[in-house]
Amino acid sequence: MNAVKLSNVFLKTAAVLCLTAAMAWGASSATLTMGKAELKSAGQLAFGPDGILFVGDSANATLVALDTEDRTPVRSAGKIEITAINQKIAALLGTAPDQILVNDVAVNPISKKVYLSVSRGRGPDAAAVIMRVDGSGKITELTLDKIKHSMVNLPDAPASKDGKGPNPRMETITHLAFINGNVVIAGLSNEEFSSSLRSIPFPFQQASKGSSIEIYHGSHGRFETNAPVRTFVPFSLNNEPYILAAYTCTPLVKIPVSALKPGAKVKGATIAELGNHNRPLDMVAYTKNGKDYILMANSSRGIMKLKATGLDSYQPITAPTEVAGVPYETIASFKGVQQLDKFDDANALMLIDNEGSLDLRTVPFP
Image (cartoon, rainbow, N blue to C red; front, side, top):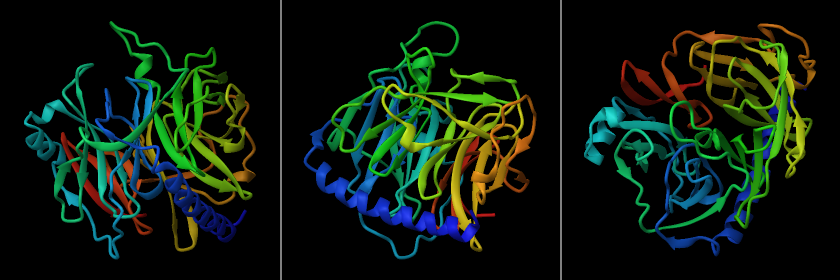
Protein backbone atom coordinates (compact mmCIF):
# COMPACT_ATOMS: atom_id res chain seq x y z
CA MET A 1 0.00 0.00 0.00
CA ASN A 2 1.49 3.37 -0.94
CA ALA A 3 1.74 6.31 1.45
CA VAL A 4 -1.18 8.21 -0.11
CA LYS A 5 -3.51 5.24 0.23
CA LEU A 6 -2.36 4.63 3.79
CA SER A 7 -2.90 8.31 4.64
CA ASN A 8 -6.42 8.09 3.21
CA VAL A 9 -7.06 5.03 5.36
CA PHE A 10 -5.91 6.93 8.43
CA LEU A 11 -8.27 9.80 7.54
CA LYS A 12 -11.19 7.44 7.00
CA THR A 13 -10.42 5.68 10.27
CA ALA A 14 -10.27 9.03 12.05
CA ALA A 15 -13.70 9.93 10.72
CA VAL A 16 -15.09 6.60 11.91
CA LEU A 17 -13.49 7.10 15.29
CA CYS A 18 -15.03 10.58 15.62
CA LEU A 19 -18.48 9.21 14.80
CA THR A 20 -17.96 6.26 17.11
CA ALA A 21 -16.78 8.60 19.86
CA ALA A 22 -19.88 10.78 19.57
CA MET A 23 -22.15 7.74 19.66
CA ALA A 24 -20.25 6.21 22.56
CA TRP A 25 -20.41 9.39 24.62
CA GLY A 26 -24.17 9.69 24.12
CA ALA A 27 -24.58 6.11 25.31
CA SER A 28 -22.05 6.32 28.12
CA SER A 29 -23.03 9.56 29.85
CA ALA A 30 -25.73 7.77 31.81
CA THR A 31 -23.34 5.00 32.88
CA LEU A 32 -20.84 7.29 34.60
CA THR A 33 -21.54 7.86 38.27
CA MET A 34 -20.44 10.76 40.44
CA GLY A 35 -18.30 9.80 43.38
CA LYS A 36 -14.81 8.81 44.41
CA ALA A 37 -12.77 6.97 41.81
CA GLU A 38 -10.89 4.31 43.76
CA LEU A 39 -7.48 3.92 42.12
CA LYS A 40 -4.93 1.69 43.77
CA SER A 41 -2.44 2.41 41.00
CA ALA A 42 -2.37 4.77 38.00
CA GLY A 43 -0.49 3.38 35.05
CA GLN A 44 -1.27 3.48 31.33
CA LEU A 45 -3.45 6.28 29.95
CA ALA A 46 -5.51 6.75 26.78
CA PHE A 47 -8.22 9.17 25.68
CA GLY A 48 -11.56 8.04 24.34
CA PRO A 49 -14.69 9.98 23.37
CA ASP A 50 -15.36 13.53 24.50
CA GLY A 51 -12.67 13.97 27.13
CA ILE A 52 -13.01 10.52 28.69
CA LEU A 53 -9.66 9.43 30.11
CA PHE A 54 -9.02 5.71 30.51
CA VAL A 55 -6.63 4.71 33.30
CA GLY A 56 -5.09 1.29 33.72
CA ASP A 57 -5.08 0.21 37.37
CA SER A 58 -2.99 -2.96 37.34
CA ALA A 59 -2.87 -3.30 41.13
CA ASN A 60 -6.67 -3.51 41.24
CA ALA A 61 -6.87 -5.33 37.88
CA THR A 62 -9.37 -2.72 36.69
CA LEU A 63 -9.84 -0.31 33.82
CA VAL A 64 -11.21 3.06 34.92
CA ALA A 65 -12.96 5.71 32.82
CA LEU A 66 -12.78 9.28 34.14
CA ASP A 67 -14.86 12.16 32.80
CA THR A 68 -12.33 14.99 32.79
CA GLU A 69 -15.04 17.47 31.65
CA ASP A 70 -12.26 18.80 29.44
CA ARG A 71 -14.14 19.38 26.20
CA THR A 72 -13.23 22.90 25.06
CA PRO A 73 -11.37 22.77 21.76
CA VAL A 74 -8.39 25.01 21.11
CA ARG A 75 -7.71 26.74 17.79
CA SER A 76 -3.96 26.85 18.23
CA ALA A 77 -2.27 24.23 20.36
CA GLY A 78 0.91 26.26 20.99
CA LYS A 79 3.63 24.25 22.64
CA ILE A 80 4.62 22.73 25.98
CA GLU A 81 8.00 23.41 27.61
CA ILE A 82 8.28 22.45 31.30
CA THR A 83 11.62 21.55 32.83
CA ALA A 84 11.84 19.39 35.96
CA ILE A 85 8.13 18.61 35.98
CA ASN A 86 8.77 15.86 38.53
CA GLN A 87 10.07 18.48 40.96
CA LYS A 88 7.08 20.74 40.34
CA ILE A 89 4.64 17.87 40.87
CA ALA A 90 6.44 16.86 44.05
CA ALA A 91 6.10 20.39 45.41
CA LEU A 92 2.37 20.44 44.62
CA LEU A 93 1.85 17.08 46.33
CA GLY A 94 4.01 17.95 49.34
CA THR A 95 6.71 15.35 48.87
CA ALA A 96 10.28 14.97 47.61
CA PRO A 97 11.10 14.59 43.89
CA ASP A 98 12.55 11.11 44.48
CA GLN A 99 9.10 10.04 45.72
CA ILE A 100 7.46 10.87 42.38
CA LEU A 101 7.13 8.40 39.50
CA VAL A 102 5.53 9.50 36.22
CA ASN A 103 4.05 6.35 34.71
CA ASP A 104 2.47 7.68 31.51
CA VAL A 105 1.42 10.82 29.65
CA ALA A 106 -1.54 11.42 27.33
CA VAL A 107 -2.73 14.43 25.34
CA ASN A 108 -6.43 15.26 25.25
CA PRO A 109 -6.98 15.56 21.47
CA ILE A 110 -9.73 18.16 22.03
CA SER A 111 -8.11 20.63 24.42
CA LYS A 112 -4.44 19.64 23.97
CA LYS A 113 -4.09 19.56 27.75
CA VAL A 114 -1.62 16.96 28.98
CA TYR A 115 -2.48 14.34 31.60
CA LEU A 116 0.09 12.41 33.64
CA SER A 117 -0.42 9.30 35.75
CA VAL A 118 1.74 9.60 38.85
CA SER A 119 2.74 7.47 41.82
CA ARG A 120 3.25 9.50 44.99
CA GLY A 121 5.68 7.36 46.90
CA ARG A 122 7.46 4.11 46.13
CA GLY A 123 6.33 0.53 46.51
CA PRO A 124 2.88 -1.01 47.03
CA ASP A 125 1.61 1.82 49.25
CA ALA A 126 2.23 4.58 46.69
CA ALA A 127 -0.80 6.83 46.10
CA ALA A 128 -2.27 7.04 42.59
CA VAL A 129 -2.57 10.60 41.27
CA ILE A 130 -3.62 12.14 37.94
CA MET A 131 -2.06 15.52 37.08
CA ARG A 132 -3.10 17.94 34.33
CA VAL A 133 -1.04 20.54 32.43
CA ASP A 134 -2.81 23.32 30.50
CA GLY A 135 -1.57 25.41 27.59
CA SER A 136 0.02 27.99 29.89
CA GLY A 137 2.05 25.31 31.65
CA LYS A 138 -0.04 25.39 34.82
CA ILE A 139 -0.02 22.04 36.66
CA THR A 140 -3.03 20.93 38.70
CA GLU A 141 -4.28 17.70 40.23
CA LEU A 142 -7.39 16.06 38.79
CA THR A 143 -9.67 15.53 41.76
CA LEU A 144 -10.64 11.88 42.12
CA ASP A 145 -12.75 12.28 45.26
CA LYS A 146 -15.72 13.63 43.30
CA ILE A 147 -15.68 12.80 39.61
CA LYS A 148 -17.94 11.07 37.11
CA HIS A 149 -16.41 7.68 36.44
CA SER A 150 -16.94 4.01 35.79
CA MET A 151 -14.75 0.96 36.05
CA VAL A 152 -14.62 -2.64 34.93
CA ASN A 153 -12.78 -5.59 36.48
CA LEU A 154 -10.49 -7.75 34.36
CA PRO A 155 -11.51 -11.35 35.15
CA ASP A 156 -8.30 -13.05 33.98
CA ALA A 157 -5.66 -10.92 35.71
CA PRO A 158 -2.57 -12.67 37.11
CA ALA A 159 -2.44 -13.20 40.85
CA SER A 160 -0.53 -10.69 42.91
CA LYS A 161 2.75 -11.95 44.35
CA ASP A 162 4.50 -10.60 47.43
CA GLY A 163 8.18 -10.87 48.18
CA LYS A 164 11.24 -10.74 45.97
CA GLY A 165 11.10 -10.55 42.21
CA PRO A 166 8.63 -8.85 39.86
CA ASN A 167 4.94 -8.94 40.67
CA PRO A 168 3.05 -10.23 37.58
CA ARG A 169 -0.11 -8.40 38.73
CA MET A 170 1.61 -5.08 37.98
CA GLU A 171 1.85 -6.10 34.32
CA THR A 172 -1.87 -6.73 33.95
CA ILE A 173 -2.00 -3.55 31.84
CA THR A 174 1.15 -2.58 29.95
CA HIS A 175 -0.47 -0.40 27.27
CA LEU A 176 -3.94 0.62 26.11
CA ALA A 177 -5.71 2.50 23.31
CA PHE A 178 -9.28 3.36 22.29
CA ILE A 179 -10.07 1.73 18.92
CA ASN A 180 -13.47 1.79 17.20
CA GLY A 181 -15.52 1.97 20.39
CA ASN A 182 -13.38 -0.49 22.35
CA VAL A 183 -10.52 -0.12 24.80
CA VAL A 184 -7.77 -2.50 23.72
CA ILE A 185 -5.50 -3.52 26.60
CA ALA A 186 -2.12 -5.22 26.37
CA GLY A 187 -0.64 -7.07 29.33
CA LEU A 188 -0.55 -10.37 31.17
CA SER A 189 -3.35 -12.75 32.11
CA ASN A 190 -3.60 -15.84 34.31
CA GLU A 191 -3.93 -18.14 31.29
CA GLU A 192 -1.29 -20.69 30.28
CA PHE A 193 -0.40 -18.42 27.35
CA SER A 194 -0.23 -15.33 29.56
CA SER A 195 0.56 -12.68 26.91
CA SER A 196 -2.83 -11.06 26.42
CA LEU A 197 -4.77 -8.51 24.40
CA ARG A 198 -8.20 -7.62 25.75
CA SER A 199 -10.86 -5.68 23.82
CA ILE A 200 -13.50 -4.11 26.09
CA PRO A 201 -16.50 -2.19 24.69
CA PHE A 202 -17.16 1.28 26.08
CA PRO A 203 -19.41 2.13 27.90
CA PHE A 204 -18.43 -0.67 30.25
CA GLN A 205 -20.71 -3.50 31.22
CA GLN A 206 -18.30 -6.32 31.93
CA ALA A 207 -14.99 -7.55 30.58
CA SER A 208 -14.53 -10.98 29.06
CA LYS A 209 -11.32 -12.95 29.01
CA GLY A 210 -8.65 -11.63 26.70
CA SER A 211 -7.04 -13.24 23.68
CA SER A 212 -3.80 -15.15 24.23
CA ILE A 213 -1.06 -13.93 21.89
CA GLU A 214 1.71 -16.08 20.39
CA ILE A 215 4.61 -14.61 18.41
CA TYR A 216 7.87 -15.78 16.90
CA HIS A 217 10.85 -13.98 18.45
CA GLY A 218 13.68 -14.09 15.92
CA SER A 219 16.33 -12.81 18.34
CA HIS A 220 15.47 -15.62 20.78
CA GLY A 221 14.87 -18.17 18.01
CA ARG A 222 11.57 -19.48 19.39
CA PHE A 223 7.83 -18.96 19.69
CA GLU A 224 6.79 -17.04 22.81
CA THR A 225 3.48 -16.83 24.64
CA ASN A 226 4.31 -15.34 28.04
CA ALA A 227 6.07 -12.06 27.21
CA PRO A 228 3.67 -9.08 27.30
CA VAL A 229 3.33 -6.44 24.62
CA ARG A 230 5.24 -3.43 25.96
CA THR A 231 3.69 -0.79 23.71
CA PHE A 232 1.56 -0.68 20.59
CA VAL A 233 -0.01 1.70 18.10
CA PRO A 234 -3.24 1.19 16.12
CA PHE A 235 -3.01 1.45 12.33
CA SER A 236 -5.08 0.51 9.29
CA LEU A 237 -3.97 -1.98 6.68
CA ASN A 238 -6.11 -2.74 3.64
CA ASN A 239 -8.98 -0.89 5.34
CA GLU A 240 -8.77 -3.18 8.36
CA PRO A 241 -7.69 -2.12 11.87
CA TYR A 242 -4.47 -3.68 13.12
CA ILE A 243 -2.25 -3.37 16.16
CA LEU A 244 1.46 -2.87 15.66
CA ALA A 245 2.97 -4.25 18.87
CA ALA A 246 6.51 -4.10 20.23
CA TYR A 247 8.05 -6.53 22.72
CA THR A 248 11.23 -6.55 24.78
CA CYS A 249 14.33 -7.36 22.66
CA THR A 250 12.58 -5.94 20.14
CA PRO A 251 10.24 -7.89 17.82
CA LEU A 252 7.64 -5.80 15.99
CA VAL A 253 4.40 -7.69 15.40
CA LYS A 254 1.17 -6.98 13.53
CA ILE A 255 -2.09 -8.35 14.96
CA PRO A 256 -5.56 -7.91 13.41
CA VAL A 257 -8.03 -6.30 15.81
CA SER A 258 -10.78 -8.55 14.39
CA ALA A 259 -8.99 -11.59 15.86
CA LEU A 260 -9.29 -10.34 19.44
CA LYS A 261 -12.13 -12.56 20.64
CA PRO A 262 -12.63 -13.68 24.27
CA GLY A 263 -10.46 -16.70 24.98
CA ALA A 264 -9.05 -16.89 21.45
CA LYS A 265 -5.48 -17.95 20.73
CA VAL A 266 -4.03 -15.49 18.22
CA LYS A 267 -0.72 -15.78 16.36
CA GLY A 268 0.81 -12.42 15.50
CA ALA A 269 3.03 -11.90 12.43
CA THR A 270 6.53 -10.68 13.32
CA ILE A 271 7.52 -8.19 10.62
CA ALA A 272 10.71 -6.81 12.19
CA GLU A 273 13.46 -7.58 14.65
CA LEU A 274 14.90 -4.27 15.86
CA GLY A 275 17.71 -5.52 18.10
CA ASN A 276 18.04 -7.30 21.45
CA HIS A 277 19.01 -5.97 24.89
CA ASN A 278 16.36 -3.30 24.48
CA ARG A 279 12.91 -2.48 25.86
CA PRO A 280 10.45 -0.44 23.79
CA LEU A 281 8.87 2.32 25.89
CA ASP A 282 6.26 4.07 23.73
CA MET A 283 5.10 4.48 20.12
CA VAL A 284 3.20 7.04 18.07
CA ALA A 285 2.06 7.15 14.43
CA TYR A 286 2.19 10.34 12.36
CA THR A 287 2.22 11.73 8.83
CA LYS A 288 4.81 14.15 7.47
CA ASN A 289 5.13 15.47 3.91
CA GLY A 290 2.48 13.00 2.81
CA LYS A 291 4.33 9.98 4.19
CA ASP A 292 3.43 7.85 7.22
CA TYR A 293 5.83 6.95 10.01
CA ILE A 294 6.06 5.28 13.40
CA LEU A 295 8.17 6.84 16.14
CA MET A 296 9.33 4.48 18.91
CA ALA A 297 11.13 5.34 22.16
CA ASN A 298 13.44 2.64 23.54
CA SER A 299 15.42 1.98 26.71
CA SER A 300 18.80 1.43 25.07
CA ARG A 301 18.39 2.21 21.36
CA GLY A 302 17.07 5.77 21.53
CA ILE A 303 14.31 6.96 19.22
CA MET A 304 13.60 4.85 16.13
CA LYS A 305 11.79 6.23 13.08
CA LEU A 306 10.12 3.54 10.95
CA LYS A 307 8.38 3.98 7.61
CA ALA A 308 4.74 2.92 7.91
CA THR A 309 4.30 2.43 4.17
CA GLY A 310 4.00 -1.12 2.87
CA LEU A 311 3.80 -2.87 6.24
CA ASP A 312 1.69 -5.57 4.58
CA SER A 313 4.53 -6.43 2.20
CA TYR A 314 6.95 -7.81 4.82
CA GLN A 315 7.03 -11.58 5.12
CA PRO A 316 6.62 -12.92 8.67
CA ILE A 317 9.89 -13.74 10.42
CA THR A 318 9.89 -17.44 11.34
CA ALA A 319 13.58 -18.28 11.75
CA PRO A 320 16.35 -17.08 14.09
CA THR A 321 17.65 -13.63 13.15
CA GLU A 322 18.92 -10.44 14.72
CA VAL A 323 18.02 -7.16 12.94
CA ALA A 324 15.64 -7.79 10.02
CA GLY A 325 12.36 -6.74 8.45
CA VAL A 326 11.02 -3.18 8.58
CA PRO A 327 13.99 -0.80 8.39
CA TYR A 328 14.48 2.08 10.78
CA GLU A 329 16.72 5.04 11.44
CA THR A 330 17.85 6.27 14.84
CA ILE A 331 17.14 9.94 15.61
CA ALA A 332 20.32 10.83 17.49
CA SER A 333 19.10 14.28 18.57
CA PHE A 334 16.47 12.76 20.89
CA LYS A 335 17.94 11.32 24.08
CA GLY A 336 16.37 10.11 27.31
CA VAL A 337 12.80 9.95 25.94
CA GLN A 338 10.64 7.97 28.37
CA GLN A 339 7.12 8.62 27.04
CA LEU A 340 5.57 9.73 23.74
CA ASP A 341 2.19 10.93 22.55
CA LYS A 342 0.89 12.80 19.54
CA PHE A 343 0.37 16.45 20.47
CA ASP A 344 -0.92 17.63 17.09
CA ASP A 345 -0.32 16.85 13.43
CA ALA A 346 3.13 18.46 13.47
CA ASN A 347 4.43 17.76 16.97
CA ALA A 348 5.08 14.95 19.41
CA LEU A 349 4.85 15.33 23.18
CA MET A 350 7.88 13.86 24.93
CA LEU A 351 8.72 13.17 28.56
CA ILE A 352 12.51 13.30 28.68
CA ASP A 353 14.79 12.13 31.49
CA ASN A 354 17.55 14.72 31.69
CA GLU A 355 19.82 13.25 34.37
CA GLY A 356 16.99 12.87 36.87
CA SER A 357 15.08 15.97 35.80
CA LEU A 358 11.95 14.97 33.89
CA ASP A 359 11.24 17.55 31.18
CA LEU A 360 7.91 17.72 29.34
CA ARG A 361 8.05 19.32 25.92
CA THR A 362 6.59 19.35 22.44
CA VAL A 363 9.01 18.52 19.62
CA PRO A 364 8.42 18.68 15.84
CA PHE A 365 8.07 15.25 14.28
CA PRO A 366 11.32 14.26 12.55
